[in-house]
Image (cartoon, rainbow, N blue to C red; front, side, top):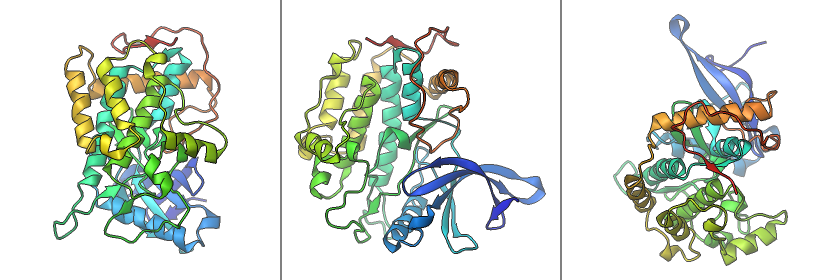
Length: 348
């Protein structure tokens, strides 16, 4: 039986499931046979009765609907189903998460190209700047801080477009806090040190998260890792960051400086804004001969998709919003690249 939400959104299949919500691949139906792919996000049943979580879910819809930027995944609709449960209808991004993109290169025994990683970082930072620079209806500053920038929340489309998703943990400064004392929202490994002490989110907290993401995508390893959350928090608070040069020797010194500045323990020593960091990355790319436009990113996404399909053919990585952390270990067999313009660096 076809499930139709709001009389026009057809639920097709489960695309991903997290600790708070499920995301389905869906399709909009309009007049004269019009259809369009969409993502439908629905709260998990146990949480649908939780007033605080529902408030957070409604906040996500309200906040993101006001953020209009090409690098932010857009919300098309927000409504309730016949049972009175909320759902979000979002832009469907066909491609890979940044985490999957990295695993695609790892499956081929290579590091991610530093130039493409920097170019992707610029797009994420521009998305964050749009959120940080948000104005309310009266033109007053009303910034939104993401607080959950992770490799799983960055989408790379098959067309080479970078999209930042999942503002579900964002908090607009014109709203009251929905964080209980002692409860830290956001994936622990990507939190800025001050947030682990219940500090206020800021542009610098999101910059720190981007620094962690870039470090991991370049190194091919987790930065703050461990099974004990308390120990991970302790590591973050110490903010001891291993030198990226220990993991690969092809990174420009200026790139190391940019990432290290984003990861400073003291927020005052980080970039003053996400745009400042984006500008430094852009200046670095201007002096390289590598091409990093959307066409090259698209080629790399399609190539990485092929590598992941080869390692686990039964589950091709084409579903957005899903982390799929259980992908098989990388196959070390060599393959010929489909396009030599995609730069690769052999892992140590």
